[in-house]
Image (cartoon, rainbow over all chains, first blue to last red; front, side, top):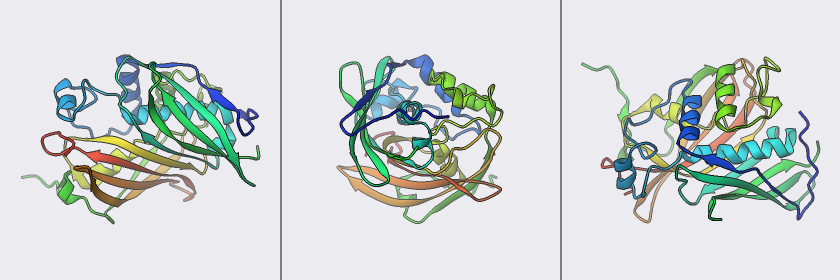
Length: 141
Length: 148
């Protein structure tokens, strides 16, 4: 695996859009149940009443699916520089509703002797940031 | 009569220093395929059909926090994922046996919501090599399912 696309401070990378609809969420949930996870039977990801009690207008996607979306983008862009020695640190800043289209972004912010530091974020179709944070990559391939 | 001695998953039972796990599992090729299909990721590095020991997508095992919580706690209304950090030390591979364990490292209230942070690690179960270190910070929903 190479996937070590050149990127210099100031460069930005943008992913292809990812439609996180109910089918994508269901497929993601099925993928994770090995071994089976604990999850309340009625929860904010599947039940409108549970979502409303928690303060959401509708069931929301699992935050880890949004983290996974940008994680796969960084792996595709930067390969082993990310997979061995990389790091992400993110906040989930806004709920993702089923049907949202997510686009991941990475901006090379600064570098030091060993690491390239990125600002990363995921936007929905309205341009609202649903995830924000930082990532680091090894500078050497 | 139940022999389940786990505590209910609620704020008063969570405190710093509680150790969770370990849990053990083997990375399954079908799971990798399901995961990349769900994310519509065509990256050949994560395709077990091309390499029986293919790399595992870096975020596929984020949800190990749920397995770890279930070793000590039961029930609850779930939570809302607020923050997450991951260090990727070495990629997992299909067929690899994994040991995961973690510790609750923070509990706090902020703007009326109860948060907890669970730091956890995944190691190669045979060699002990550190593969991932990560932490989730989540808002715990109360017994009514509210963020209070």
